Length: 225
Image 1: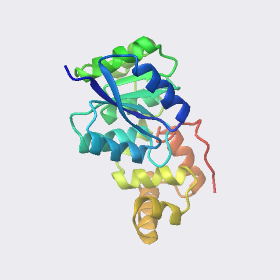
Image 2: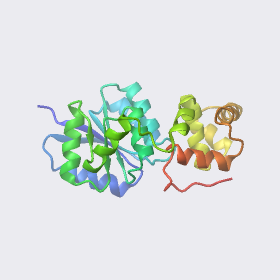
Image 3: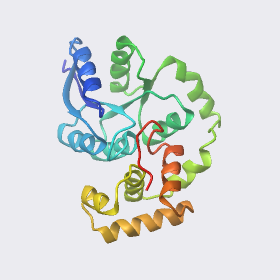
Image 4: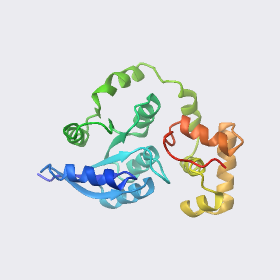
C-alpha cells in the first residue's frame, strides 16, 4: 500500500520541520514537499499532486484559504487539511467554503494530526474535537458576525481577492503587479473594482475589511499606508 503523500504549507520553517519530523515516524505517511507561502503551495500541489495538503491559513502572498481554492482547481483529488492557531467562527466558515475537508488547531496533538490526515485522505471530514459542535451550529445557520462581509467577499473575482490580500499586506501597486505578473494599470483596475464592490474607498479600511473577512489573520503583521 502506497504511503499517503503530504505537502506541508506554512510560512514558519520551524513549524514545517516539526511536522516533518513528526510525520516521518508514521510508516503510512510521507512528506513530499514544503511550501513557505500560499503561491508556492499552489505551484507545488499542481506539480506533485499530493494526497493531502497540511495548510496554514496565515501565509504571505496568498492566504491558505485562497490557496486551497486554487489547489482544488489544479489538483481536484487532493484533500486539504487546514491548520490554524485561531478558532474563530470566521475562519471555520471560510475553511468550509474553500473546500477544505478538515480544520485543526495548532495545539492539536501529534496523534490527532496523523489521524486527521488519514481521515481526510479517505474523503472524510476531520476537525479538532473542540470545533465539532461549533461547526454543527454553523450548519444550522449560526453564521457569526462576519456573515455580511463574507457575502460581499464572494462577489470578488479570484484576482480581485489576490489583490485585496496583497494590499492588506502593505504591498504597493508596483509590488503587487510584479507578484501577480500583471501590469500596474491592471492592478489599479482590480483595486478600483474591488473598492467599488465592497464600498470601501481607502487602503486602511480595505486592510481592516480583509482581517474581518478572514482574508488574512489578525495576527499577520500588515502595513497600513
